[in-house]
Length: 630
Image (cartoon, rainbow, N blue to C red):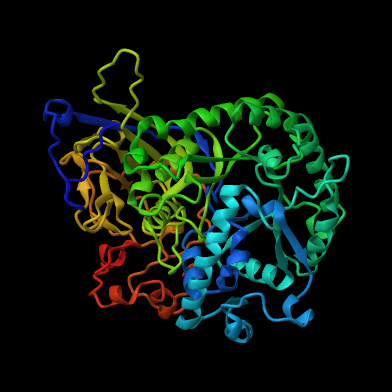
């Protein structure tokens, strides 16, 4: 697939592509309508969730999860699940010791931070307490030393990954406390992955190593869900010993029995088997697992990564055939699951744009958003109940937040999704897209449109609103004419675009909201630029009931009062403001509880604060000034 988005100089976007005449295809008018009579399905409220890899124990970043900045960013994605798992799940050991370094009388394990070990402990003791949450402010010097240390550790982790030989990791009681504090204070529900590679001679699971972990967690009254192992289909490669699906199912039943013996976890959810991409051997493993333990797990989990991060190119992130691989994988999983447990929930328990840690200047840039938003749209439409993003914060380049605690483009994309998109999925009807069949080749859609009821917790929109999100993979702008149910309705358009000279490979995004220039569908055709995504369209209503009287509605007039009963039959739930507010002042409704203005401002780089932030009143939760660097 030829890629002509960028000119010879970075950031120079072309509107004309050599060899592609500006013909009828570029001027095609797309007619768009949404079926608001009945939803095609309803996904979990925590549909978009996040993951942390156990490698943060090794590189030392776990000690910094109490950072005010990290917690604030995580709260923006709540409610969500936080999966603590990954490649190193099966090399994780728990020690019920508060400080193993001091107990053995030797020096601290971090030689880079040995002079600051006492400072870390002291900062944890004297944390700022916000309704029981432990939030720390780490000195810049300490963070800089940690980044230097982590850079060296990452070389070791990379060597382990490529050699497929992993060293054991020790999780102390104090580290578990920090992990749970991060999840709890961020409004996330922790899912903890247990080591499944401890095996008995008969190849059954040796569960003795997890008992102290379960008892300690229960004594602290930690609310945790559980899973066992990670990608059991790779165990032969990892340790030279394979585990088939039947045996792995028995292991899960053993875990269920152990949890039932502990009062605090007798009803704790269990998720699994966390298999990899459903190739033939993986499908066979899943089949054996479902026969034995299909009714034991609360949801069936599997993982999907699109491409090899070591060889990825920017053009790969926009190949329609690559984007459609997820749909094929979902079909294979559904076939097995529905054979044994029809209706069982299915989760995408780990997903990223690229495996092998991702690719710098690609999987951490705007370009990666095509795959990420496509994943969310396809998963919601095809019956996946929860999608867990790998990773929120970690080594590598698949993250939402980098090691300077700065949000990357996929974070802003996720934040937009969480605040605008609700769990009810609607059917979309599109007409007018020209397709010319080519012999021997399947033509895939390059304009991807998804619709949901708007998030009921977003106080900027009353119940009855509808949100659409769009990906344009065409080499030309596309005009979208709203028809049918959407005709003559007021539209709020939000367009997330790359910022800077790097174009699609920019690590910054700029949001261009159209709130103050709200449009009627009758009088304007919405335009989505070439190679762009996240054209969020919101259709608000004006039917205000007594229950809705506290909502702020900025629409002063409409062609008609339009309600969508489908999107109004859910209870209001707990109302809260968006993570970014017009005043940036303390407020009881803020998702970060009693955090002050400074707590939020810590998430913005110093150079950005010097700009004049023009936040409209009432303001949408993201503004161009917030998202772009100087």
